[in-house]
Image (tube, rainbow, N blue to C red; front, side, top):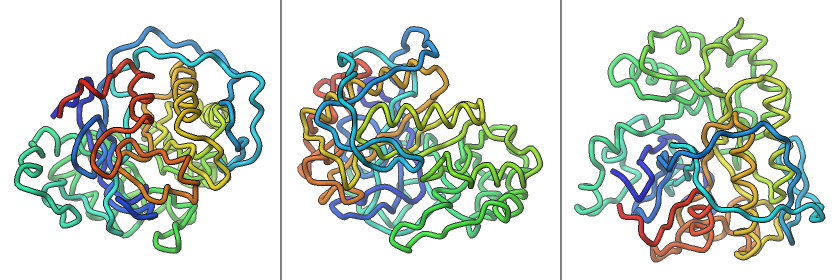
Amino acid sequence: MQSGNWTSSSTTGVKGAAVNQNQKLGTQANAGLNLPLAYSQESSSPSSTSASNASPSVSAPDSSGSSSASGGSGTSDTSTSLTPASGSCPQGFLNAVFNTNAVGFSLDTLDKQADYDLSATQASQLSGAFNKAQIPIVMDHTYIQAAVEMLANNPPRYLELYNEPDFSFENLTLTEDAAPSASDLETLLDAPHPNTKFISPALMDANGPWLGEFFQACNGCIDKFHAIAMHVYNPDPQGVLDLIEQLYGTWNKTIWITELSPATAGCGLNPTTMATYISTLIPEIMKLGYVEKIFWNSGESDSPPINGAPASCSPSLVNSDGSFTPVLQALGAACGINPGTATS
């Protein structure tokens, strides 16, 4: 399935804001444009020019929130704002997270998940190519054996190993200690997977101690990961860039930002300044040259917004009636995509 310049690739796992609920749990996917379902898909947007490794200095106007190790909020400096830009992105770079309203995890394809109440028309849109594009997540240690079986029977292109093991959302998700996780995941890391690339545990605080302890305990397993995943919730573009650069400086490895949003309790953005945030930040991330994919959270209509953010800072790409928001327009424009002309 394609939506404009976006090729679908959904992510099955838990995390993100649930549809019309303040739940960061459900079936996560990486999303495209103007699609009616609660999923996320991996985009395929136009190729861009070569990226540089310059270290930009940017900030969004009227935003509240400075960088921290955990991507938290504070006060931003708006004195060095860059001029917003629009253009094109590398293929597969721009994605969005969609979630269900259910707490759970499944390695099933979307059309086989009870979390989705699909009409016949919607179900028919879940083509084999769309399901094949899913990016499953091994949420915690209880799903390792199922993932091993998936590698043997229906290997995905990518598999993310653990989602925020350093953070429990409202005590509904498991936390995992780093050293035991290295031991627990050894079976999965050593399983034959010639057609699957592993993505590292996606941490709420990617620059905290967890990842270093994990790699120290797993006897060089960093080479078994295609990319290191991170989550960033920060309304200050420079704060986002600082966190990304810090992570790359530590590990010198390809990065996936599997959750990106300005939505925090201290966010002072409104729809206009969020559009500036997006059009400022996205090109600067591309310039870094080592961020392969970003996943905006979230694609569906969230009420209230995730992370206790004020309603004015909602990162939703669509309204409750399915129409697209200015946020989606800005996100598409940053990669040269017009959601008004995209078709599913």
